[in-house]
Amino acid sequence: MRRAALAIALALAAVAPAAAHTRSVSYSSWQLDSSGATVQARISLLELSRLAFDPALDVGTDGAAAQYLAAHLALRAGDAPCAAVSPIAAVPAPKGWAHFRWRIACNASGPRSLESSVLLDAAPSHLHFARVAGGPAGVRERVLTEAEPAWTLEAAGGSGPAAARGTTLFGYIALGVVHIATGWDHLAFLLALLLLARRLREVAVLVTAFTAAHSVTLALAVLGVVRPNGAAIEALIGYSIALVAAENAWLLGGRGAAVPVVAALGTALLAGPAVLGVGSIGPLVLAGLALFTGCHFALLARAERPARLRAAVAFVFGLVHGFGFAGVLAEMELPTARLAPALFGFNVGVELGQLAAVALVWPVLRAIARASPHRFAPRVAELGSAAVCGLGLFWFVTRAFS
Image (tube, rainbow, N blue to C red; front, side):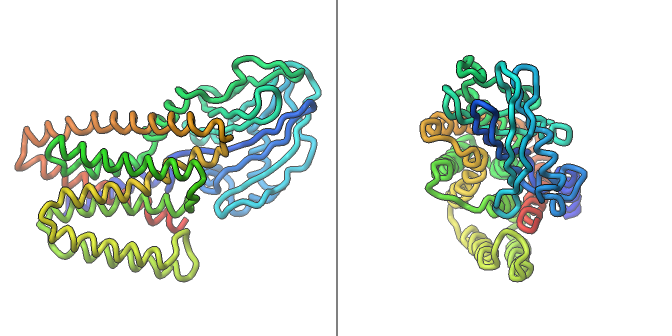
């Protein structure tokens, strides 16, 4: 028990500096014309909290958030920067987001280029998704990173180089790989599933169930069929991690009543603040999660083949994680013609990254199990489950009530 508590404490200490979100992204759209461009930029308040100012106080048109975005998103004509010629206007945005619009004029001629340095000082892995419309190249999009912060667009006169094209299929595959590689919450869920797996066939069933589910919801969300609350989905991802890791601890600890009772009651108690309007998840949803938690452990206790129930849980939570994967593409507002290659490439990238993670972790776990099946391996599973449970709880609570 002491080892488990220590593992949870160390896990929480490790993730606390990274706050509640592990991926750093922002978005902009640019409507080009002969004299300049109209710009719209969106960023979450959680991302703005990485900076020195308080986003809750500075999201107005004269606030630090607006000035920061305008200063770190640039359009150039040749070597000359284009200048803002209109006041920055706030655009109505969903809860937890800041959205601004302004006008830029280009007085010089020459090839245009778009540059982003948004949050690169605070988060070098930050991804900025730029969508450009206007000109002979039509609508296209590009992911701007620390390694490639600039994008050459068509010349002001109308002709444009091949570099003006948007992100390619292989670019979206790479984006999917990066997304899963930097998505510590998704990786933590995979680890929780793998810690108690004993055979390769069991791993294949779990990964297949998870993959099939998140592929479905990824497509539904990107195509606009379903539009879930992003903040609630992020919180539910944390819940899924905590529950599977708690299940591991329960199985390793002899299936006592303590873990199910604490898990169900703890989730139910979170409905109290939600009744007062605090957080992104309603009290009925939290009550439903508490009921789901209790029923899950009750079914698991009676299951003749717990592995089948675990595969079902991997599928159910895979549906939730798929909505989390979809957030990046859904926010880009891709044109219809670009949806298919973007969705296919991104999903392939996610699967490749996921398989790579399993290929790295599973052999290590099996080597430990073969070397010390009765002493060291159970301790690794116990401490690993406790640490992952701590991470899941941290993400669940901070995302639900941030």
